[in-house]
Length: 384
View 1 (tube, rainbow, N blue to C red):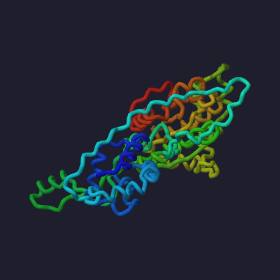
View 2: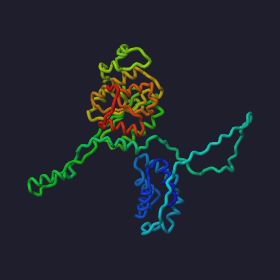
View 3: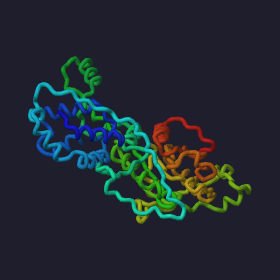
View 4: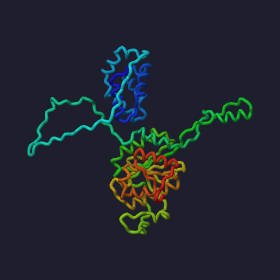
């Protein structure tokens, strides 16, 4: 039998994005009948984490909710019941759980005091205040599970390591050719050798997005199951130093483009980038570019001026020159923008989107970015 406090925990987890169903409740019931989770309160919490949490963020959230929703008194009373005292009982009561629906927004009534008079003190002695605990946690547009589901599709399967997997076809072919019961042929297991380079914009207009971007990057690193993930940081544009004299050749206008300069714009392969989020540890761009291979996927994460709606021609020149340096080493380069595409209009981001595949940092945008990194076709107006 499952106590009511675990039902409340189940509902609270679903409200916070856990993809739990009645099958998960049944799995918990069977685990309890088998004798798991009875040793202590910590053992029950560990059992719930093992069954219901799929990421480190979900583990942390479940643990905090368990501490607040599941009381010691409720567990003690439940374990004293005859049904709970016999976890191996052949029959168990039917568990009925009502899945939560979308809560209706509460009606807010605004009370204004009469003109010229103060509202005064409002006594709360007889007010009915809720005693339910509040759990204040960040709620991001994307869960760690959604990020992981998108980036696990970026795969470069190779066979490496010890020979532990049976090659059935090769074994059958060899035995048929020799007519003998030869030893089985073993091959290494396949593993994902995809390499990913994250270039993340920090500070300035990206400050409001820091927590969200860190959440996405951590989910990619810990749950993406990629072969290698490296993260470097920059401010505004990855590097600076492109030849400003080239801009004198552009036609005057409010928002000139770089179309006429693209064929002769030299790649920007010098400068510094940073290996820490605080922008305190510079790293030569030459060393960064030397690590890239044709199988490395590069993701640039920046608003590209869209947050303030600015159009900076020098920033555009430096960024396009650096993108050309990246494309010399790998064709797999995409840009993720934390702002939706309607906010790009009139900013540097709108021009960069003409030269590099740029997608909003949401669920659909990440899936499209991964599809491009896997070799999918994407039409650009003026590719670098």
